[in-house]
Image 1 (cartoon, helix red, strand yellow):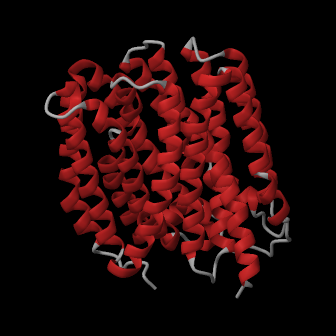
Image 2: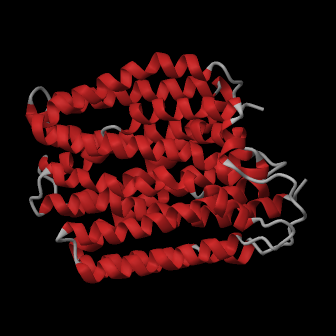
Length: 403
């Protein structure tokens, strides 16, 4: 059993890496779409931003290689090496897009794709390290670092970044994000010191992961949950801009709203998981998200409700609901991962998350451009409702993580 002080140091170290990874996500998912919309790019082109999640959808292909490199048979732990090299690539990528400018969009997307490959690889190593380093402690601490770090990073990349773009310009904003990521990875380099790994009779592999019922079941739950929760996420920023707000307002709302209500949702979700179990939290989050999407649909084009009033409420409420549910989902993922190959198992779960996000996000842009916000958000609410009974039934096949 590890000491409480060591556990907190590990949680803080991995939390810094998760925040850094989510800065890139915030810039990509909230910052860039908002900037592009102010330049009057059509929604179908903005939807292409979702393609940047491709490395996160495919990282299971190289996860076994990374995991075997990270923990070689009888060699030294290389977690720090992987994280620092990946962080250096991300910092260089942000420095590059700072020089390129936000348009034309294709070169920016190409550089961000490189950064996405680097962050996806870093995530494999960090998740594997977390599953192993926190073994014998409540996994909820590591899960809190994941979810909380994700929302803090989103607040920086999607909030602070947009405010900086509005005030000091694209280049200075991008370079500031690069500096922030470099600083955030320092604690991991100091805490996750390399150690000699004993001989490993088990070799991490995809076959080993897929042979386990917990993993196969988790993949099904992940796909259903992400369809329900994330199908409309990429359109919230453009909808907010089209409702009459500017970039600075989007940045402040994304940053402050995601940070405060996202953390509140994560804390509340953790308490509800302990009290009611993961299945109830997952279904409750999807039901709440369905209501938010329907509310937005009713406000599209000021049809029933005023879009200018609904848009900000929907954005912050959605952030809280997603954090509420993802505490349960990621807690399940960590509990189902084999500590001998945590980087592989956890990666598989995240890849389903990323793949469904990419497909639904790209389709969302095309559909919203063709049929309008109202029809799109009605469809998204319908998909969310349709997933409810399947999530309830599948999640019931596995005990919750209460203990």
